[in-house]
Length: 427
Image 1 (tube, rainbow, N blue to C red):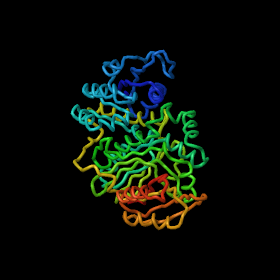
Image 2 (cartoon, one colour):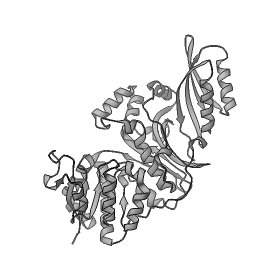
Image 3 (cartoon, rainbow, N blue to C red):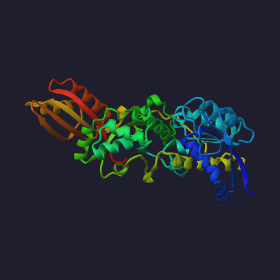
Image 4 (cartoon, one colour):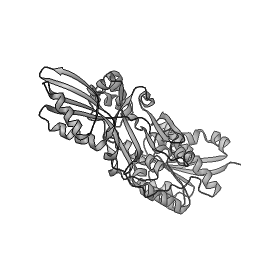
C-alpha cells in the first residue's frame, strides 16, 4: 500500500504550476516507481482568479494555510524573494515539516541559519533546483563528492545572460536587441537586472562555494561584474582571437582563502564551456582525484526545474516515512573568504590610444613596472588614433589592476575601453 504524503506549494507560477501538474497527472506513476502517494493539498497564489493549469479547488491566497494545513506534511517554496519566503520556510521547519525550495536568493543570503533550524528539528531543507534548474548538481556535491578535496567550481549558471551572449557572438546582435529577444522568448524577465548584473549568478556561486568548500560567503564578498557594458566589438575581437565571451561564475582557493566571483570571461573556443549555447547551463567541478566533471543541461524553465523540485520532494517524503533526516547535514568551517586580488589571472585589455611613435614602448613600460607580462598585442589604426588589444600572461589580479590604473594616467592612452578576464586552464 503506497504511503501518503501531503504536499503544499507556495507559489503557483511557472515552476509551481508545472510541479502541481506533475503531482496530479503523474501521481499513479510516481506511486508505482517510489511507493509514495504524493497528494497535492494546497497551492498558495497571489491571484486566485487567474486561470491555472490545475483545478481551482487546490488554490488559496492565504500563504499560512499551506504551511499550517493539517494535511500538508511537506512544504514546497517556489515564490522567490527573501520575504515572506524566509518566514514561511522557518515556520514550516519549526513545525517539523521538511521544506523543498528553488529560492537561490534566500539560500545564498540565509543558508546557514535555515540549515541549522532544519537540523535542530530533525528535518531537511532541500534545494536542488536553486542552482542549475533541472541539472542534478547539489546532490552530487553534497553526497557523491563529499570525500573529494575540491579545488575549483566554475561554469555558466545563468541562462538569460548566456542566451544574450550567444546571440551577440553568433549573430553580431547588439546587447539591446539580444535582450529584447530573450524577453520575447521568455528567457528574460521584464526587469532583467538580477540576471544581466550578475546578481543571480552570484547567489548561485555562493551556494556552490558553500557546498564545495564549506565556507558561506556573504553576497557583499562576491566579486561581481555583469554583461551590461560589454561591447559587441569586443565579442567580435574575441572571435577573431579564438575566444568566446561567457558570464562565468567561479569559486576556488587562493592564498587568502576561498574566492567567489562572477564576471565576463574570454573562453577558448576549444574549451567545453565555449560550446554551451543559448539558455543552457554548465558547471565544471574540479578535484585531484576526479579531475574534471561537467554537469550540463537546461538551467531554467518550468518543466526542467519542476523535475529537480520533484526529486527533492520524493527524497523529503521518504525522509518523513523513514522518521529520520535523509539529506546529509551541511557543515561549515572557519576557512577565510579570499580577496580576488590574490587570484592568478589573465586579462584581455582594449585601449584607445594615439597613433604615434613611442606609444607601444610607454604601454610596455607600464606593464613592466606593474609586474605584468604581455602575451600578445594587436593594433588597428584609425588616422591619428589606434586601437590596441592586449592579452596578458598569467599574473596576480592586483598587478593587472595596477597596470590598468597606470595606463589610465598615460597621456597617449585616450581610454581603457575594455578589460575582460581570460579563462585559466584547470588547476
